Length: 96
Image (tube, rainbow, N blue to C red; front, side, top):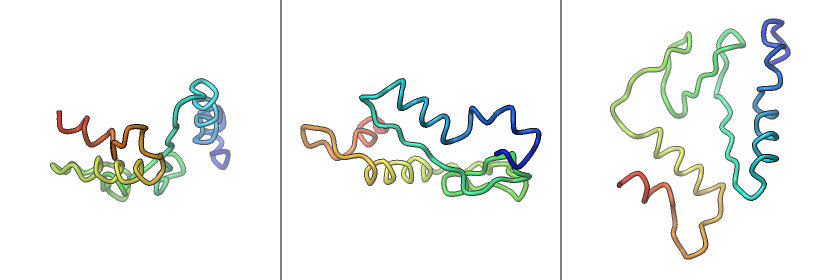
């Protein structure tokens, strides 16, 4: 983020800084931070693993829920299951 002069004022909102801030504000909660797959022009974050986007970072609309399914798989791998045996809190919330 410091590579581009225009981005320097926003360094306090970098991925690492935001994760640290959230972990201090919510010490009893899990914090899951998703890093962008690529940066266009060192400023536009592209999350192609969730939503495909063009070469300039414009996201494509897809009518599927593949982004949510991808995020759910990441959560399941990253966070231990809740006490009580529920495999996925996200799964029960998305089908309501």
